[in-house]
Image (cartoon, rainbow, N blue to C red; front, side, top):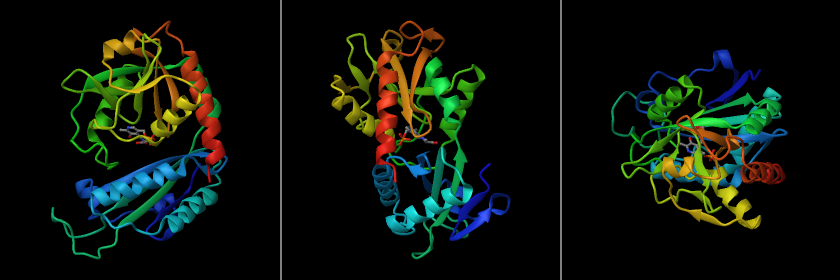
Length: 287
Ligand code: PDD
């Protein structure tokens, strides 16, 4: 069990870890977050996550709470105190605490910072990947700035609950043009009927997944034909393979979309190979 959280400069037992009732993250979802996969106690894809954090904060004009170096130390110390080797690290930075008013608080209000760590059972994750998972589709109903990693995740939470109720692990949002944008907490990919690896381009209203970006590199290095181009649910069902990516799922084969089989209904060779290559690379570059 992970027991210790970092809250605004202090390491505290989780049951005593609290934030103020007028934290703007709590009242307005005025906060951003990041999630790192942990391999052997080290943070995977550090550069990508720090770069995206910096961008999310800048887009919302929230002051960085500390330097990247100091933040790395805080993240690593939280991991160390929890004695977690395989897991996830969660960081949330809100605009801070102020009497409720929609407009920003006074300049100089310090951002509020929370870090938690959770354990992942890698054997169970590998077993799940070997079997593949189901996804459902649901109409896109999120705001227009999904490129910013904010904690405003209500549509994502509702979509993922809808998925869970039918035994699926993810919900893919589908936009007005009938194209898949991304999952509730992952990016969506297919190996299309022509054997081309496809994932949506980041001009669309999606999160610029760090795993997605690393995997594009991995796939190109592996000599795969890659296109950043959207697809429809029907194309996914008619595809050779489908999968999702994210810090939580890494590369996870999708074998069913809306109850219909993808390919022969088992994880495809490309997805499984990319999972292995991604994990190797993430482990090698973890800090
Ligand atoms: N989610 N799209 C959405 C909407 C996400 O929330 C996430 C990550 C991703 C994948 O991004 P990355 O590869 O950088 O993890 C795509 C995290 C894991 C979460 O909310 O827990």
